[in-house]
Length: 169
Image (cartoon, rainbow, N blue to C red; front, side, top):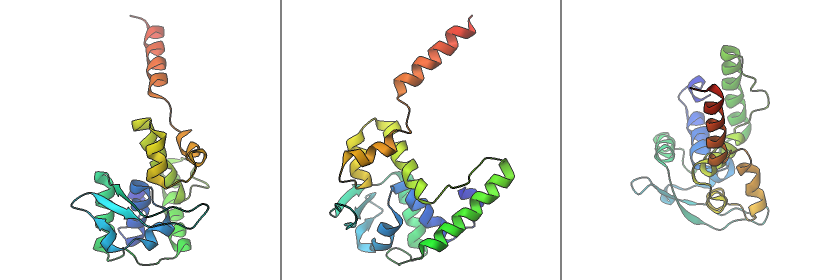
């Protein structure tokens, strides 16, 4: 999807969602002083939604650093933006990918990038509490929505072994 998007501040924002797990509203509240790209850290702004979250220093992946570096290049850290313009640009890119590949991307939203981040962290680590903290969830039950998409590596290995046994020597 990112390949179908033109280089822009909107693409950078979508990449920040995908590689940090920040919601668009948190990206808009993020301040330049909260981001230390050399240390690969940022301070997630507090949230009032639901039970809310407090400010918290969190580490960044290399992709997260690159995404925030791109956003900083547009001088767009801490700059409010329209959620609808983000959504419409993202949908145009999805439509292009769908036309080019035939993959059904109907209903895919920029917020789904946040879901994918949570699922990827869980698939890599198996650590629900880490996913909970990175996504800023007050309740572990909320995090379960993101971890259900990941398949346990033991199960993948078991199926791989079954396939190898079935194909024989």
